[in-house]
Length: 180
Picture 1 (cartoon, rainbow, N blue to C red):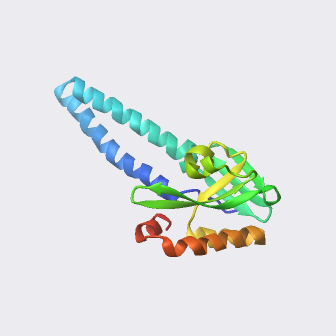
Picture 2: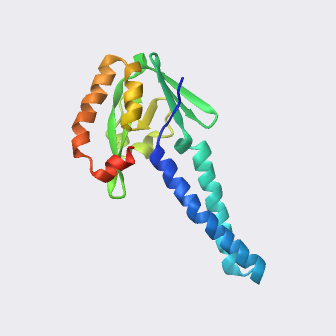
Picture 3: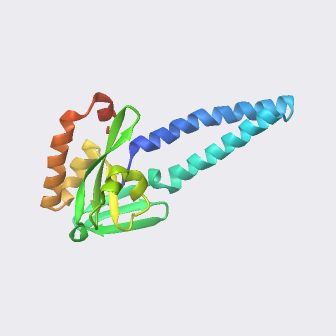
C-alpha cells in the first residue's frame, strides 16, 4: 500500500529552516574555534544546536514527518513508530478545513470518528494533531487526492469532491503553489 506525505508544505518550511540555521551554526563554531569562546559565539552556537535538534525532531517524529495510506477499508496515519487506523464505517465527520499561513491558506482534508467542535475547526492543526486516535488528515493536494479517491466510499468521496469544487476557484496562485 502506497504511503503519502501528510504535508509537503511544512516539511519544506522546516528544511528551509535547517538551510538557514546550519550555516549560522558553522559560522558560530568557526568564530568560536578561531577567536576563542566568547559569550556571543557560544550563545549563537547553543541556540543553533537547539534549533537543529528541534527541527530534526519535528521532521522525523512529529506530524510533519507523518504519512498516510488509504485502502477500501479505511485510512491509516503513520507518525514516527506509531500508526492509527480509521475504518471508513467509523468515520462520522469529514471535510476540508482552511488554515491561515502567511499570505494564504493551506487546506486540509480530514476524517474523524467524532464530530469536530467549532474550536477544533478554527484552530485545526493545533487542536487535532495530538488526537490521531480519532482523526486522520492530510494537506489537500490534487494529485494525491485523485489517487486516493477511488479507495473512499462514494458518499465520502462525493462530499470531498464537492468541497474541492467550492474552494478551488477561490484559491490564489500562492495557495495553489502550497498544494502542489
